[in-house]
Image 1 (cartoon, rainbow, N blue to C red):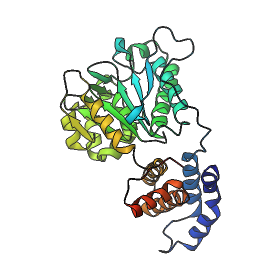
Image 2: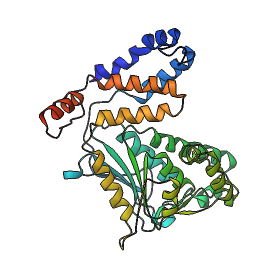
Image 3: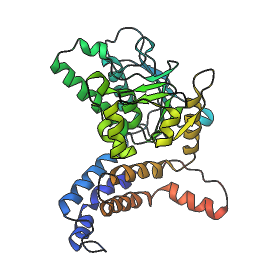
Image 4: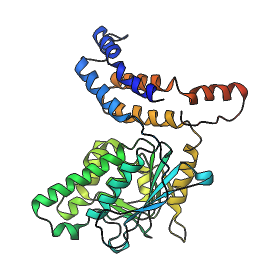
Length: 333
């Protein structure tokens, strides 16, 4: 499989020739530098997998961090094998994004992105009534202007790491998701919310503007005019309102335990588990990279991803299962 993934890097010449010919529709791909940039972005997204080492259920704390860890990584087993959870657990600050929490999230993502056994990554909260309250403004008050700039850059980098995670990601929003908390959810592929959850990019009510991707991901999710309205007003939305706008995929009534969105997100993850994992990951690349370019270039990206999937064992298994009228057994090879 390593050879198959590596072969993507050999597609530059055919793509260049296709660009110079103008494609089958005459000049559809535009200039080759744009195609080369697209190919570099795509090959960067399809990083060669390292040999797999099983991840154990564990807490993830930064070096030198005092007290309990602020996140936990949980690898589910049995019928949920393939689902990994990142649980945020900073009750004293309502899961606010401070230096320790951000460091622990970055450390966990760096470990998990190399594990091919992670088929779905689910973000949830261990604090009842809150998903993530946003940036830790009390901590930020103690920072100099230079330190604030460095921290916001790290926070933006965290959201980019979540967005670039190779497997599907789901945010289970069982409570407040404000400012950076909603930006974290926006960086995920899918969002599930309790109908009573409260979310919004409220930075303008604090003399700020969204600085961890909100000004970019919200308009891509909802459209420019609606995103501007929500950011300019700092409006808060319920889970039900968010679903009506298309901000979340599903809403569910909250239960007494306060984890209804988590259970719905886990059920959604279970729908993804049986599907061919390489095809799912390549589909994510094709969608994400294709949204950043014109449709003709996006079609070229889709073609590159499709070509990568052709030699896989899972594709052959899917065809055999269809022919033999049985459920496929995908193994991720």
